[in-house]
Amino acid sequence: MPTEVTEEQRNADQVSGLDALELGPQRKKGQLGRRIWSSTWPKLLAIVIVIGIWQLVYLSEWRPAYVFPPPADVLAELGELAITPKFWDGVQLTMTRAITGFAMAVAIGTLIGAAVSRFAPLRAAIGSLITGLQTMPSIMWFPLAILLFQLGEKAILFVVVIGAAPSVANGLISGIDYVPRTWLRVGQVMGMSGLAKYRHLILPASLPSFVSGLKQGWAFSWRSLMAGELLVIVPGTVSIGVRMQTARDLSDAVAVIAYIIVVLVIGILVDQLFNASDNALRKRWGLTGS
Image (cartoon, rainbow, N blue to C red):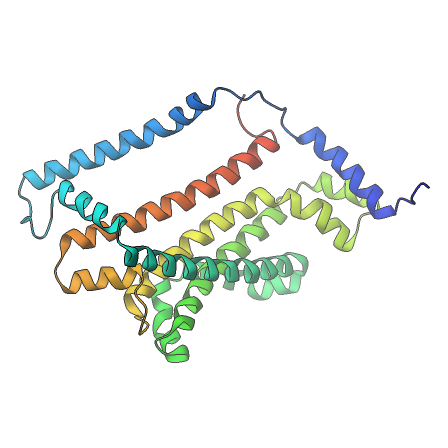
C-alpha cells in the first residue's frame, strides 16, 4: 500500500533537488599511485630541506652538541621511542585527553553558535565576548583552572574546552551569517521554518565554514593541551608533556627535540584529516578547479 508523504519529506526532497544544482560534477578517478605521489613528494622534499638546514646549523657549531644535537641522534631516539610500550601509553593518554576535550568543545561551541545566530539579543550580549575568548592565550586560564580543579585532569580539560569552544562557535556563526539570502527566501517559499529550515537548509549551507571553525578549534585545543601537560602534572600519569618536561629537567636535548617532533607529527596528521574533509566538501559543492 502506498505510504503518505509528509510535508517535511516533500520539503527535504525539494531542497535535495536544489542541492543537486549546486554540486560539482562527478569526476573520474585517476591512477591511485599518481595521486598519492603528487601529494607525497612535496612533503618529502620539505622534510629533506629541513633536515639539511638542521645538519648545516649543527655543523656550524652554533651551539654545543649537547644543546643542539644533530638530526641523526634525534632520529635514532625516535626509533628507540617507537619500540617502547611506555611511549605509546603516553601518546594514548595525550590523545585521549585531546579527543575528549575537543569533543566537549565541539558540543558546547555548536550549541552556543547556533543560539547566538538564532537570537539577535544574545548576539548583541555575548557576540564580542566569544571573539575575545578566542583571542585569549590559553596559558592565562591555567592559574584559574588549578584553583578550581587542583592538579587534576579536570584542570587540563577545562583549559582545552575554553580554548577551543569559541573557535567552533565563531565558525558556525560565520557560516550561518553567509548563507545566501536567496536560499533563505526559497526555503521560506517552500514552507520551511523552525527546525526544518535549520536541518535542511541553514546547517548544510554553513558546513564548509563550520569545518574551518572545527579545524581552528582543534589547533587551539592541541596547543592548550600541550601547555597543560607541561604545567599541570597529574600524579600517576605519564603523558607526552610529562616526558618532555622530564627530559628538560635532565637536560636531555635529544629527547626534548624528539618529543617536539612527535607533537608536530600528530598535529600534521590531524590537520590532514581536516584537509581531507574540507576538500571533500569543496568537491561536493563544485568549489575546486577542474
